[in-house]
Image (tube, rainbow, N blue to C red):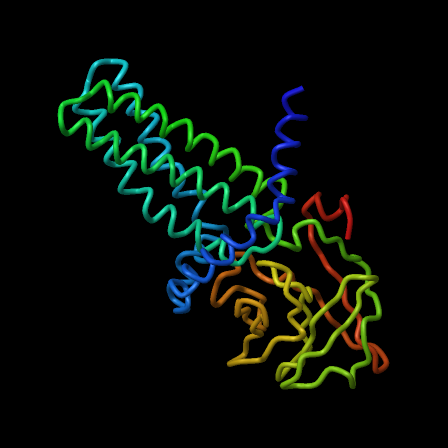
Length: 293
């Protein structure tokens, strides 16, 4: 069956350690592009509430697909414009994709490298196609577009594997289930203002601190790549993840600064007889019928 073949291919890529060297070199090259917080925030798509890259991908792919349609209809001018549109919009698409990829490691980084390589081949073919079309060599341009679309299709398949099989860009707490009943998590004296403390809600780690009027608790797992928030720092009423400096507002768990795109899951907290109790109220079915903690 086809799925056995595709699984075999992706598994080989995931385990291909020979890709680690090129991956590390590329990461070292591109990571300085995202050091400024504002750039990191924008490229990650934090303001949207989910990664920006998948949204932008639709533009060049849509343009190049439509170019095929107009080529078939004999409208060379429209096809040429659409090929150029795809080329131009592929640049910000790649920029956001590299941002997401730069935070990965291991199998995710290897698959992402192949994904990027396939798309680079596709983009190069489309640039060559546009140049050929500009010179009036429309037949060659159409052939190069076919090569480009084939490479982009392969890249898209690898991108789907990154998102849906490896979970790159997915909230790392999406399937985490916590009790909706009040459960003892820590002693009240253990949670102090200006410090980050740990709690445990029936196996779900919490990060806790005391604000002026209350104790707050959030999942002790950054929604971006799963970093332990209790090892982070407190800055201006926020907790900063120690891994990639994602910043969450302690008032409500919202993301103040990317690369995370999803808020930190919040828990209700109350104090009873010197002990802190917490619970999670969440109506989403994937958490009430979890696949695992």
